[in-house]
Length: 267
Image (cartoon, rainbow, N blue to C red; front, top):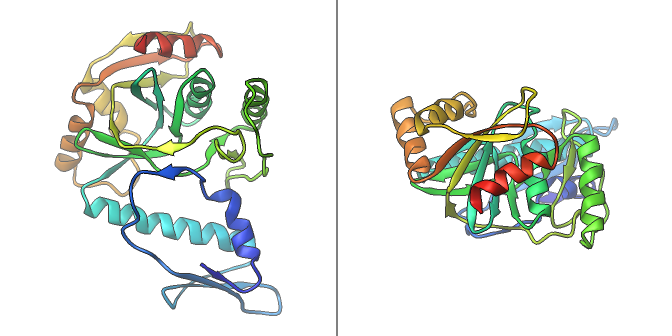
């Protein structure tokens, strides 16, 4: 990334995850950002070709990040990886995938499990290939109250918080980096899924009920990103990822009770 005065790089900082990744980079992509007009617009180049014009350094940073992630997903797809939406957390030697509709509390639950002895992997999306699953490197996106609760809980647990950058998604959700903002160890690893938990946001007591892999396949397929392989290949990929995993549906319930319900699955 080349940036004449450093403004775009500074804006990129809070948006880029600080996780240590197990997968080695397979390709480098070069981006340049230069101020093009007296109004302060930025011209963005990708490998020397014009990518976009952005009205500010912040918009330029988000455009570059979005484009680089798009490229990364394209390369991953060529290597047989399929992208899913969901939060991924390791707990008690098991890898747990949390899925559910937007606003169902996936991010908050994953972070709460991490604060109770788990290891958060990611909360936005993940890649699966065969039985292997790995989280996509990105800061956690939480509602404002959840972000402040997480910071307070991490401080109470003795984590060395580095100070929240107050970065936001375009939708206004707070971005938290588990390592940089919460003082957690954050290492992304490749491992099979052991449990898949679908969150049910309807009111009710927090309780994990067993469900079938077939039902879970339908649940996951309904929330796939736009860029997915043809359906037969997709269903084969999903079936492979779920092979050997236990599947449950969790009534969200109250904070604390839902974590207990998930912990009960792996203990």
